[in-house]
Image (cartoon, rainbow, N blue to C red; front, side, top):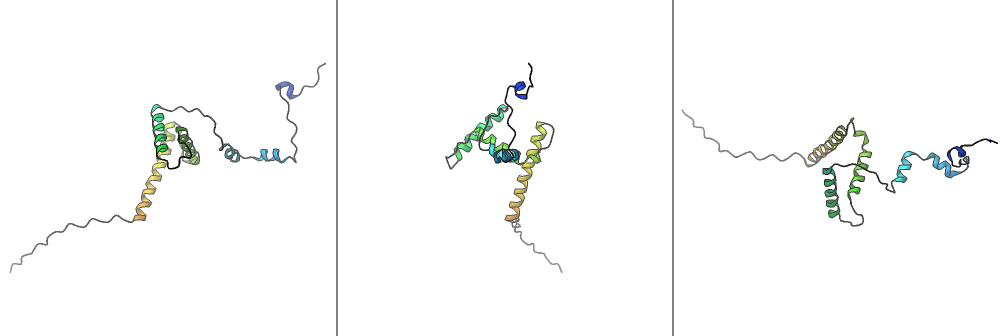
Length: 149
């Protein structure tokens, strides 16, 4: 005798019970935004495979070692993965400056933005310090004009 089949027969899992509207746990979970989920996920790390060029891997390791050696507080180790996570945070914070359809175009737009920031910083520093002092004019002897009468 074939009876009514429910979804659990088809997928091999039990169907979750209907949500209780008075249950604050499910209501809070349902109202969680992407940014709230991202904030919670920030507390843990998960592996993400990324293909790096040979020069990137070498420079990344060198940079991590330099930062590791230069740190004053020894509380946290700085590794290549640390540097990658910091770079990722920077990219995500400035996602609006990324433009292009290719890796080269994306890289170029980001590097142009960084160059713009450096130029702006230089101009602000120059404004704060004032104009550079002018070099004194070289002293020249005044020529005597002979008056012929």
